[in-house]
Amino acid sequence: DAMVIQNPRYQVTQFGKPVTLSCSQTLNHNVMYWYQQKSSQAPKLLFHYYDKDFNNEADTPDNFQSRRPNTSFCFLDIRSPGLGDAAMYLCATMQRGTYNEQFFGPGTRLTVL
Amino acid sequence: DQQVKQNSPSLSVQEGRISILNCDYTNSMFDYFLWYKKYPAEGPTFLISISSIKDKNEDGRFTVFLNKSAKHLSLHIVPSQPGDSAVYFCAASGSGTSYGKLTFGQGTILTVHP
Image (cartoon, rainbow over all chains, first blue to last red; front, side, top):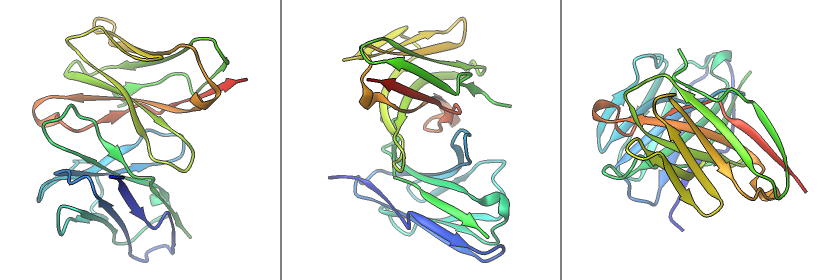
């Protein structure tokens, strides 16, 4: 089945220790998104790629970076995680030209100690 | 500034009855609206959507209504089933530079009791 896969599902890191979350897709969609969702809050868009074009949201902290080496993979790098970065991180894909329907992975829950 | 709001954090309904989930938005540039369902330990899955040129869209037990003048949409589930118990997110998108960027509400936890 075509899908969006996120690894790991659970990630524990220490305050200030860099961490990378990964996302892969078999849907061959040209747009990939990263969302941050804190407890009982709405998912918040961090950035997205349209093919190789990177689009950062204005309020995404500089601490968050992303890489998309190819169509299938996208990474979220948190350079110096703080306690406030503990959240669920959701990856999503979409084929541009469709009606905004995004396909989500299961998410990675990040804990910062 | 929350542009999409789901004011009811939770809703409890008896099996077989109607579930009505509500969503309000403030940005008049939004022209496409979606509902997602999320089970624990899974990502959100697309449920149903509606374009601003329509006021109703139906798919089986699920119907979404859009009232543009009130900037309000609602999701009706009839009849409700225990398997519908999940978190429901409303999301909105615009055109132009906002195309493909979803703004989500905080979600409503629906519990359907047998």
